Length: 344
Image 1 (cartoon, helix red, strand yellow):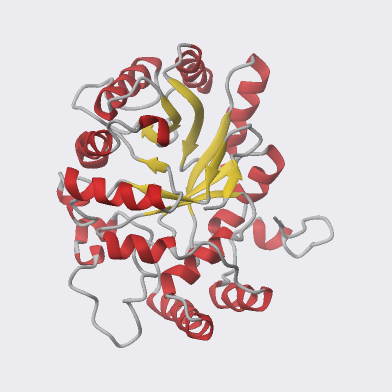
Image 2: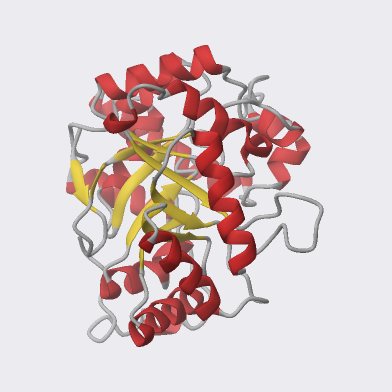
């Protein structure tokens, strides 16, 4: 498994990460993702470790904490072999302070994750969403406190806009607080908005990206094609799960899938493997988070590493998935000599 530097920090992470949204199935939303119990999750962890994938990502809201509990039990006795990443900040209770990035909630959320994971330290702790009601200084000071007390080692954020992330980095610099070394963001062949501002920012500021939903919210599994019925097992059959993901125009999706089919047939790889390998060649990507309902899916996703698409194949996929960006990016991109395309 290829190892990559996480942004500008000294920590290295594997190119692939196993997301645990499929662990537990404790709510209607997450049941559509999967429902691995402890035994099933342990098998997936075993398979990952055998392949050199030792990074596991979770969140306190995944199945109301059940995913973290199952992950903790699946790695019991081998904590020193794994890198643990989890997230906090989303609503985790009915009280007025059970949500957001305040000092009160973040410290309580982190301590709850530590208990469920059965560990003393979380390697990478991420703010799950930007909180516009809490001063950035308060959030970063709380995270810095958690680092200083040894409860977390590195900090990241998730689903921030460019100005959210840039403001946070500048506050860290001004006050000497820990800085975000990772940004967990949505990015896929059918969701390339990340390239407009967040990618140039990450390059400039040395922030590594963890890509979530790299298969476009289960649309790039190879099972959804023009003129064919959607598989019964697809999470998109759940209205709650489908509406929780990014909207994608059907014709745009089919155009991208056609290109993926062509490349996959040409090189003898599966559609998901090609889609994941494309992401692994993009600038700023530190690790791509894969999910799996079962061992077969996991084995297929693990096959996305150890080889590279050619420059011509990448260009074909780029062309099939290209869209016109919103302003001001479409205007800026007309002047490539001043705004060059990011390269890895």
